[in-house]
Length: 355
Image 1 (spheres, rainbow, N blue to C red):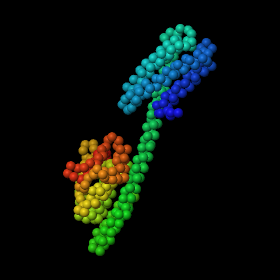
Image 2 (image 1 turned 180 degrees about the vertical axis):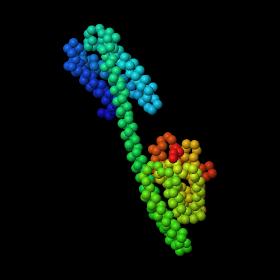
Image 3 (image 1 turned 90 degrees about the vertical axis):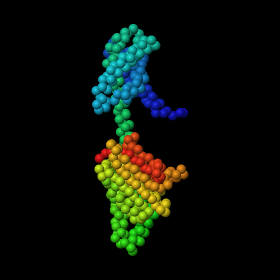
Image 4 (image 1 turned 30 degrees about the horizontal axis):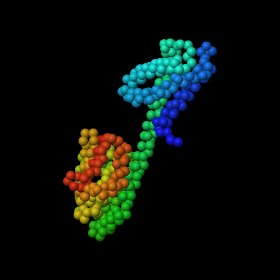
């Protein structure tokens, strides 16, 4: 048996609810009304099911109006007026179709009831159905959006934890740690002060990574402090093979950036663009404000993206950064890795400027 899709399930739910409402009010017409108004069960079912099945068919129209005219800040009064008018129109149309159907195809209306009488008898009891459907949809819509926000927040927290663990893993990478300790060991015989300074930077780098708050965004100044510790170690490791040029506008140091977003990009550039080359290379980082956008540019003069190694160049850290940007800023961001015109790889990250 073929399973119902989301639309099929929604249609079935509307049919069940409208049928239940029709049966409920039919029993009321049979039992609760005065004797002069009561109708046989068959007639009561015909009348009420006709009315509520028509309301069931009207649900897509009500939802369309609900989406088009939402009760949002600055728009709730015009939307209220539109819905008030539309509820009256739809109720009158529904009553007209229901009475025509009942008098034409059923015996539930043996007397020839005028349309005016039908409107007077049914308008006030039928009109609230429009508003029940309208606010029922809004309640469901807000629940779905709330659930999605909760899921998105959980995913962001997971990705932030992954970024923090990835940064720590990179710093404890045996190759990175071995080279760092080996450099310290060598410097102890030639430059004890430099060896001590490098040991201190390694300690600070690990401490900053572990102590960083589990927040989605930090100031650019905080992110640069972590990056500076990492670059200080890499400069000593690579010596003259690593040329780092940082150009950050001091006025943007208070801007908010995703936590653990710059270090994976720099680590990726050093690992793939500079480390494999005997002569090393140059790394340029620039951050500036362009109106409401914070523009971050990272360029290395390595081999760039090769057709066979594009996927390898974008590792877990970069993929994590890309996914977190999408969840934090949606369409209000840009992240691109392209081959620069002058050679090497250019990473561009544009995010909304916020302090």
